[in-house]
Image (cartoon, rainbow, N blue to C red):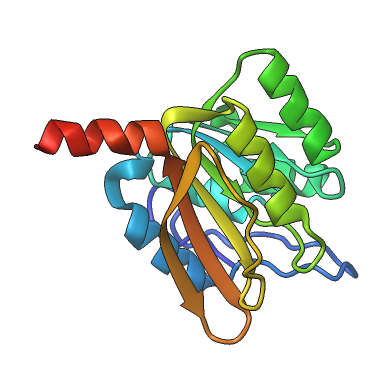
Length: 193
């Protein structure tokens, strides 16, 4: 696994040993960042269930302003990868429960422009996180939330504030779903009329 482009291009990331992890493949990651394009530059990023830090570090390499990583099991590894890619000055790592940290962000009024959510598949964590973002302001008004989930995980919860604006399927294992706030999308539609 490596950083594809930007300031840390070509840097290989360390992966956890002996854990049943499922890092985002380079092919899916490249597709994801091609979809986002310039929407990464200058953004405040949150990477939850961060694993190796792959997605957040790629965003930093491509010009994101800062990235916050949350993963209870791999915080030390993320810090190591941030140092290895020379992106540690823009990275904050939280080694705690994802939902506890999300609650702290919400209570502190913190919000993010770009959120990556890549939890283990088939455990309900993607939809639990999606419901949290729908009910909180942790995703900024004009922000983008990207949820990576199993190709057969389609029982998405009903959302009141967020809308799925794009869904891409990759083979038999993975889907990427992109969400934005309905209020922001309505503003964009009205401005275009």
